[in-house]
Length: 66
Image (cartoon, rainbow, N blue to C red):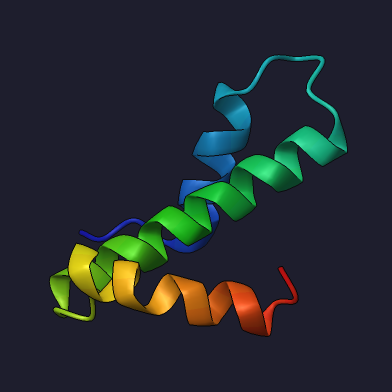
C-alpha cells in the first residue's frame, strides 16, 4: 500500500528533534517535496544533460541579470 502524503509528512516531522522550529519543519517538508518532484521528473525522462546546461547557463545568467 502506498503511503499518503500526510503519513509521509507526519513521519518526517516525527523524525526531527523535539526543539525543531516551525521554520525547520517547513524547510524539511519543502526539501522533501522538491526531491520527490525531481525524482519523478527523472523517472519520466524529463532531464537536461550536462552539455545542455553548459550551453544554456550563460543565457540563464544573463537573463537573471548576472
